[in-house]
Picture (spheres, rainbow, N blue to C red):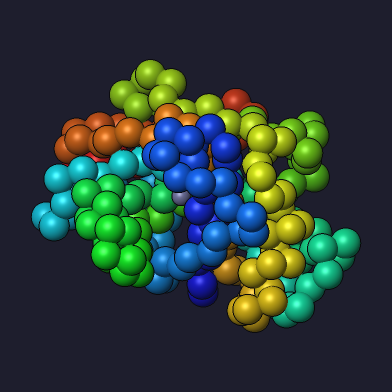
Length: 203
Ligand code: ZN
């Protein structure tokens, strides 16, 4: 199982971190050991003092493929959920300054909580999907898929140019604005179209 992630896929988030808007999808990966399923708690890692939540829509790959044409891309995924791309922002800032890869800031153990999946066809409008993150009951991130710079089909086509995608692979599609720190004791809850699909306690 592979976890693909997309960076800077919402203009308002690129702006809040003073990053330029990319001209093609920015792809990075997490390892399978990053995945947290079944509402398991997240253990705050000792190597960071600044872990941020990034709420994202997550696609599940339905069948294997490579060099997928965008017009056929939707045949390769049919389920969606919400997930959190936990990021050690302090570590990432140092890596970015040196031009080094991001893996230790993004792909560490438990850095990818993922909710229950629902069929995309069960949603009211697949082109306009609302999602939200609550932290200790307060709304901290709200997004809509229509604000993505690169949409699902473009992402799947782009990733498949470089990597064989396989059944069960996950694609974290980028975060809207509102990323912020989590602290030990916080409880995160994420929903899709008002339906809670993920809970994650920070321990
Ligand atoms: Zn992210």
